[in-house]
Length: 226
Image (cartoon, rainbow, N blue to C red; front, side):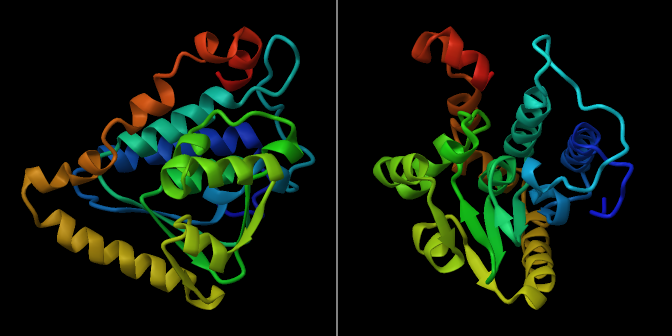
């Protein structure tokens, strides 16, 4: 999927992304998944389509892509192989959800990570709050969330949101080299080792998707999250 492809709208892009993840996750010949490009384009970046099919809408008329987004994050978390994210540009909104669902994040030096719930006026419902708290601690996660903090790649790496930073020219090479290295080691090991990712993320999917939002936050907020 290239950014210049005018046939892609947001819903179609997410559909294709989910289908690709499911194919990769189900393949016995793939041992590591690397995501780059449009995988990390948030809704604010879809300036590509002026003539395309309508985005799915809810009964209220609001754009409703939440089920697709949740399915994408769940697919990433439940596949039995590592996921490496190659980050560039501004990572915010759903792009941040996808980035934090990756096991390893390699970022270009120009990357900016923004926790923009306040700016967008919407509650996060695709794993970002859980991942933020796990990676940076609850207090720092709250500060980022309430203050709409934007981080450069140096600060993002210091906090653990970015694993490795490289120049923009080296991003693709470095990311794919890392993915190949993992695939060689991961693919040649026993079935027990193939479960390593699941052990590292134990309870992750249940923590993110098993929460009863209605009981915790009330039905109004729960509708936003679900």
